[in-house]
Length: 134
Image (cartoon, rainbow, N blue to C red):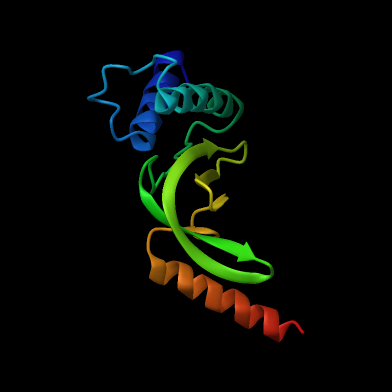
């Protein structure tokens, strides 16, 4: 992959992370938290693409600012908690790590969900698995 292809993929990823990317007058400036995340993501993505296969495709179902449900552990009891996505990070293994401010950090479909029903279903499944393993 050449540098232009890497940059195009990085911009695509930045647009998925930040819904204001095309309309923001502060894009690329360090005083915007979202732009700081985009810049960090661009650097991470460039390193990942250079060191991996060219058919890399990263899907990001949630953006910064989206409402999501995270599974939080309250003294051994799992509970879905609603919050806002405050950080999105692409890991070295190309998994996308989400953070819900003041709630939890995790991967989509494991600890982070779009709806309360999905989060409740995962809590129920984990509770079943917990009882079966005893």
